[in-house]
Each structure stands twice: as C-alpha cells, then as structure tokens.
Image (cartoon, rainbow, N blue to C red; front, side, top):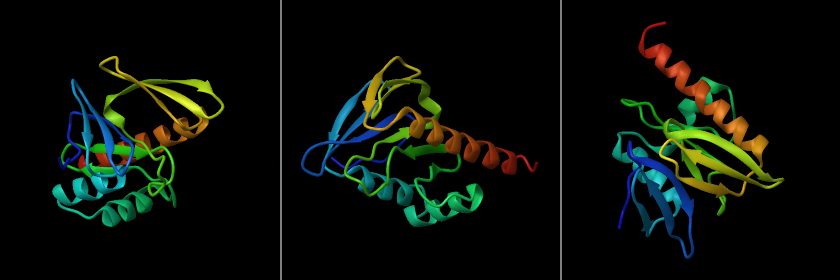
Length: 149
C-alpha cells in the first residue's frame, strides 16, 4: 500500500523493516514506505518536491533544521518532524489535529489529538514544544500572506 498524507492524517511513525504506521482520524495502517518516503511522495502528490517545500519553510522561518513542511498549501496541511527527517526514529505529526502534549519522561512525550487518540513519541517535551511553535509560526505566516497582510 502506498500512502499520501491527507487532511485526515494524524501522524506517521516509523515501524519495522522500512514500513510506517499511519494514524488517521478513525484508522491505523501499516504502509510499505518509510515516513520520509511518505513525505516525499505526499509533497509530489500535491505538486512540489520535498526539497522545495523544505526550502520554502526554511526561508519563511529562518530555520535550518527540523523544519515543518507544508504538504498541501491549499489547506495549509502542515506536518512537523520530531527529529531529523532522515532519522529512523522520526515521527511526523499533523499540526491541525494536535490537541495537547504531555511529558512522559526526559526522552518521551505523549501527543494527544483532537479525536482523543494518543501516541508516545521518542522526543523530549521541550523539543516537541519547539516543533509545535515552528509549525504554528509557519501556519500563521502563510495564512497572513494568503490574506495579503
């Protein structure tokens, strides 16, 4: 099964043997692609390369690493990585479905989605907080630009 990130995607997590675990509103899938491969395919599906989306986000934010990605600019579908995107541990989380997050321990954070689903990601609370801040800033800037502000 091939997969493109959509409005219903909550998160894409690495799974065993170059597969991913994808959480959607009401479903959970195992996909025969790595999270990074899903990101690349999703960006292409919506008309740009991952590299182009990354460069655009870097330009808007002035950030160099772990930048959030606008997968689909029509709906401001923004996802952010929990680590370096090429890392085997990288989880991609959709900003619009995020409700809250809680510290589990020094290296893990619970992410809670609007529909009540929860996942534990191998990333510190502070790192998740920073990534949410970046993704929110990207969302704000892009919405403002679309409105001509």
